[in-house]
Length: 289
Image 1 (cartoon, helix red, strand yellow):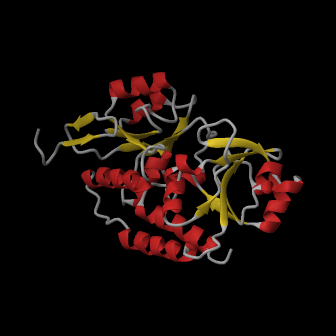
Image 2: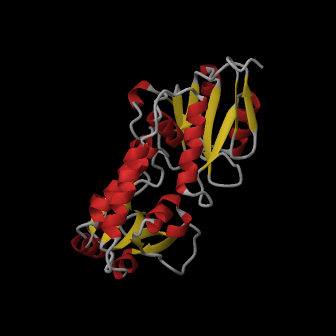
Image 3: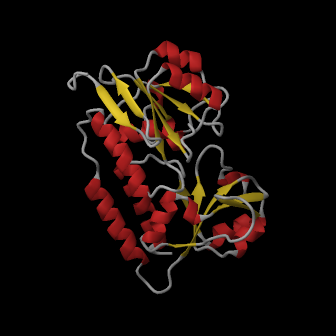
């Protein structure tokens, strides 16, 4: 293979993907596409997950120009034939462990990989946030991006969060996703790479012990309020209930009166720039909390 024209990359499953010509037409899972965009790369199109509706979730899309991109659907509505017709030369997907492609049905993922080069990067609970970020950076570099990662911005954000949390009485921070007016999903911090990174930088995250669920504990709003958070990181993805749907619940109103509620995106782009924004948001919240 001529190294000036060809391309290869070993993904997080250990699969070596070899493409005869350097990829120029890339389709990606929306989070991966938003990450590549932060590295200066413009994907041909994107696809979503079973949690998404008929249109891409803006929360997951980062700064992607959605109006200029083709969406190939999400979950069971993934348009595999449309993807084949678009003739991409590389597909970038994510996994939450075990090498399984996230967001589309297993049979569709199998057919996809039989026809097209596929790279899968692991964003699951067993990976540190910086490790996930570095793998996307490595992929972007092989795709000949001219952009440099926003390393300095991230270092400033990390230092700012360390300073904001370096005090004896740290604010109590609860991460959650609103299921609806009656129910909340309380995040278990150790199972989320971004929340673990917050803990390592000194953030006092509340661990909702007990109950079933690996990543979330399902609770009613009275249980969430009883944890007495000072700051709430609230899931802003389209599948989470927005605050206006919750205000009929007295326990949610008590949380809003007590705590500072700030946005949290569990599927934010995996770039230095996006992570710097997230850490700065949290630093701003816990500083005056």
